Length: 309
Image (cartoon, rainbow, N blue to C red; front, side, top):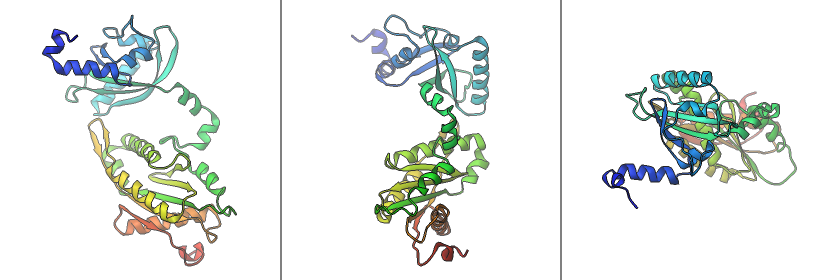
């Protein structure tokens, strides 16, 4: 039955309904206390039908007073600079057990950064444990959490010179004018942009494909069982997705486009370096055409002849 308060304030009623049903751990906080929390947020912190975090002090979910004060200070610094806080925090549940959560905190009104804020928390304990393993750090890029150059080269080497008959293609991606994003927003915001861009790229390819960050703003996608024709279709989809991608990071906004090179593995490209070099050559042609475009590497001889080596 709808309460008189809900009848008088339908927006508040909708918000309460959303917080109950949404599979998201979200809370609104103000003056150091949780004001409204979602059902999922309550469950994440060990609360249920009989108990509720609403009205309690934020300190209740942080492992110590010192950790709480430090978190509050970092949040104030981020909000004051027009940035959300996005970091992993060790939290404590109602029963005293601990977990690592990714906290994304944003002011409700950016013109009042010290006022009410919204918290979104995701349990990342398992992912964090995995990242702490030496084997993970050896294979992954720290900024994007994608495969790194070393891992990409290892996986690509499994296909170069292979006698298997399945076609294999590679996309070489170079973000156009990314230095302008770094210059205009700073390195920290640029890294968040790269992370978001990398996660978006993963959604545009198959689970069997490998997306890697080589360095800076250069990405590579390994496409097993994919010939040049279909690789070009994937490249166009990726190019369009990058052009449509928007970074919204606090008060910061950015958009970019990208140049892509497509290369299918072939006998003349008999080393990992040759394959990546061919993809980069095609990408360079895309940049020379004005960017935001795709070019395909076509071999008329050895890679060394084409590259002028």
